[in-house]
Length: 498
Image (cartoon, rainbow, N blue to C red):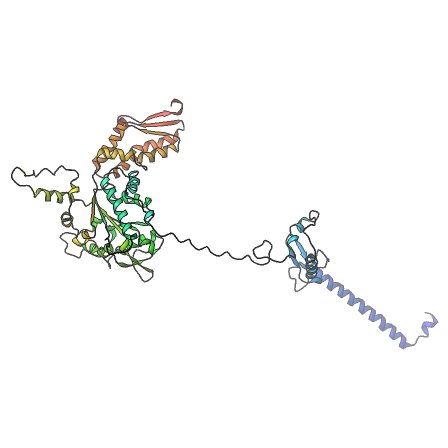
């Protein structure tokens, strides 16, 4: 130790010692701060529990999330702090990028359409900040009112029916005239003479084409047409459909448009099933009672009709429909009516030169043409009901020749349907005329009319339709009389031999 050091007072030595202690204290504090910084970088931040801030930095200023706060993530993986984002937007808003070459910019930057930035927002334009204006719903175009020109003349309407229905000339004429006169009555200017509605009653054996006539009419006319079944109708309050269900189907066909439905057509099939039951000790809820409830609807009245349902209840809305301008067509087979007609005709027989033989009408096929209102009353139809169906049309029983024509002549003939099915397999179907006679004879024996034709052809065509897809070389199949009678098979020709 030097002499000078020895001469230093004790107080000064104490100060020096304190200074060295302060330096050590300051060094230890600095180390603690560095450790604290290291702790922040290591993710020891209460606001950043996922330890992601140290990896995120602004691409412009390089500051981390710790220094710059929450960062903004842009499309393409770009990350900007709020300050740089604001500066960039201020700079971009003052620049014109329309003529700028952006091909040298990074791909992520080129993903942003800079030419749209800074432009005023225009509603409906791409890149606009405002949402495009909603398009107003287009109002449904009101359909033009029905005019007489829209209804085809009777001869035109019958010509259309001729393409689909073979025979039954009287029935087709009656329906054509009835429809035409009905709409003339609706569209006529009001005057002193008011025409009454001419509802139609179709009578004919099963399979004679009653329902098919009306279904074809539905395709040709541009007016709503509903087809209902009378077998399910019962008196109000009993299990089954109420009479309002008939009008509910018409309203559905008209798209729930009441005015359009009031100019429509309703066909009630199986009307003979509501005939008055004989020897009934209980209430006839599905016979005479239904006829009585149909009276007002057939004649014309305002009825409450459930919308979208077959019966009224508290949960179904109701619509008022006036049936004054609705044409009703009723059809039925009326089995047993021929015996009633024949019995009436035999009563006129008497003795003398002008007497008619009692067995004259026994073998008459179309005796139903002689039907009268008296015969229908004996069958079980009440007079009030018959009075609201003034036009009575009968359909003839189908003969063998008619059945052959039905097989091949109509636009939707059964043979044409099978020819189309086989043509999809590139196979031609040929049926000989003698084979058609065999099919018609078998159908006539079944006594179910034209409905039997489909069932018989299905039976004969089953094996052919099953075997043909197996061999792609088959080009033509010919059905012969011998095959139908069980004496051989169909003639099959390959494509090369044709």
